[in-house]
Length: 229
Image (tube, rainbow, N blue to C red; front, side):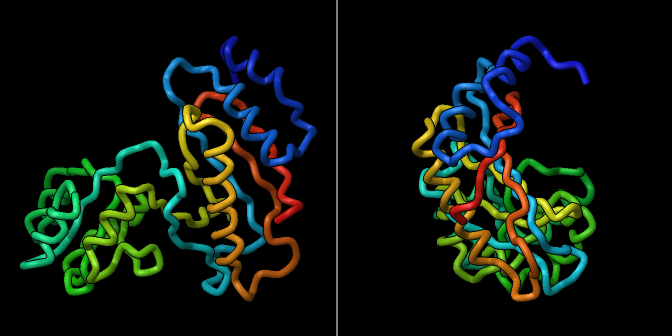
């Protein structure tokens, strides 16, 4: 794969054979970010579980101490008083069947997170085939199926993120922007890794965290030592 000069220069700052201490890794990811825009910093955690088994799923949500640096658009499926409550809390869109039809008929996806009250899951379930593959389907585990729409919307706007395994047993999550600086990125990193460890399934055997890599949008990957976790 061809890599540009900026990426190659950034790569020279990193020793790929080393697992860096968390603080050093955060300093490096900021230093090695080559783009002129404010890059997002992502974490990739490989877990020693098998996501094909229901009792080894790892999924949850956490409000990062310093947010993500990105304002996320929230769509809420609700009705009556809950509809007004959602909009008052800061939801970008709120409604019922008319939004289901807009998504299915117009292929409309101008939102980042979907929240639903439990009584709306009957109609939201019809969107499973389109929301599921995009990771947008509301779920009780992630706190996005709830009667308390005010808290759900406010937490998402404050920097709540969902973490879940992909098919290769890796969790991919944003932990902030390069402009946050190493200290705030580390606080977010510690909070997320702590949540993933708490979510360890009882059925998981052997080493739980196999590897951890952080990288900015355009920068090279940096291996992080998770020995202390």
